Image 1 (cartoon, rainbow, N blue to C red):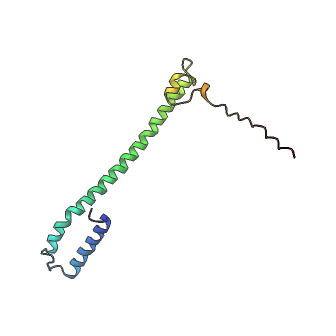
Image 2 (spheres, helix red, strand yellow):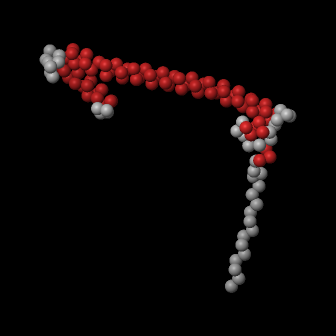
Image 3 (cartoon, helix red, strand yellow):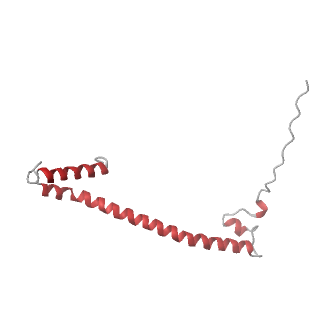
Length: 122
């Protein structure tokens, strides 16, 4: 890569503005101002293309996030349906296969403290 893309764009814009303002009829590097602008146009066209694609990506991600709200709601309804179904419930293999911990395999949360060791007598 030739350098920092943002810096290249900034430097090129500065060069063009100075050339337009101070020497619009002069030729430099074997090019007129018009020829130079035509030469660098693809660089700026691709920057515009990248901006468009970034905007499309942002919109697509927003659409995905909106769709995920519906997906999560539907998924929760299905899981709750499995839990509430007398043929399955929250201790079934189906519940576990869906990525949940079966009721019979859950830790109780009970933590028994071990008695403190007696200090050695002196």
